Amino acid sequence: MSQGRHVTATDVARLAGVSQSAVSRAFTPGASIADSTRSRVENAARSLGYRPNAIARSLTTRRSRIIGVAAAYLQNHFYPDVIEALSRALQARGYHILLFTAQADRHADPVLEEVLAYRVDGLILASTTLSSALAEGCRAAGVPVLLFNRTSRAAGVSSVTGENARGGRLIAEFLHRAGHRRLAFLAGIENSSTSRDRERGFRAWLAEQGLPEPVREVGLYRFDAAAAAARRLLSRADRPDAIFCANDHMATAVAEVARHEFALRIPRDLSLVGFDDTGPARWPSFSLTSFSQPVAPMVEAAVSAITELAEQPNTPVRQTVIPGELVVRGSARVPPEGCVSLGDSLVWRPEPAEQAA
Image 1: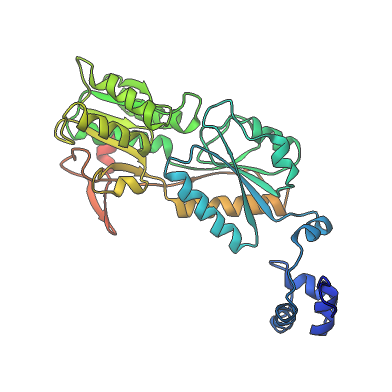
Image 2 (image 1 turned 45 degrees about the horizontal axis):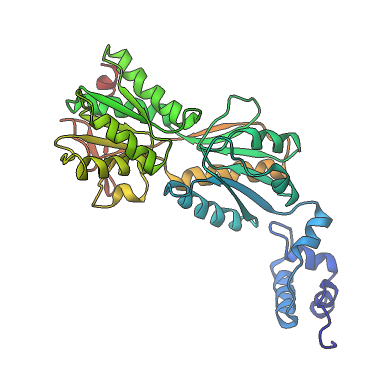
């Protein structure tokens, strides 16, 4: 073969003694081909230095095998963990991930034309801070969309979420049974379904028991905004004795302000509970009690759903809810009953009779 000549699939087929279609199937994830034939093709490709042209293949198949992931504000540890897990899980199915990022405010969506230009086979909207306009635009253009860690009032959109409302209810009960009576809720972004559902569950349990409404502040899911909200809460004459934060990222900001600016002892003077059970919750410096959103099963459900939507466009819409646990650590006072060991963790599971009380 002359120097500089581009190696083609025809060259590989000739050396391996197979058809060109066999070469194509050998490099197509999920395609039907005998193991012995695949091995011959791979050996021939390796000896010739052949690399399949993904762009050319996508033009032929009209499939890019790329899944777009739209995210914002990656300072929240939950989302980097999710993106890493999504990348591994999609790669195992023969897909690649293309990340689109935007500023973390409700008006900043990745440009729809940019997403569509890459001819992605599907889009996972993995941020509570992005508006639904991107999802709606992609759906109108025929690109399957999956909402991750959020829901939409619009019909016809599949989603994967944690137990947001149930988690809020459980946290309200946990704090009340631990003896707290001055509760506060630190919300994320006002139009975020995730924050809204967590607050709804929290308030609902308190209302059902005839208890006062919690004091409320907004932290916008940001460390700086949550710190400012914490200063307002902790400066009140009727200072809360327990704060439920809509995610762990904001809870760490509240902990820093409470300890270093107000000299409060956690949990003796103030109990803190977060949501997501991210890495910092497990750090000894925070030891944060938090309702978990298990990344592995959420990602597994998301990848299964988006690849099915990409490969079978008529797949029925479904909303998948992945159960979590209230993981108990050192940032909150603990009720006298209900804690059980689960693996290496301590979780709070009140008896059904207690939950109905």
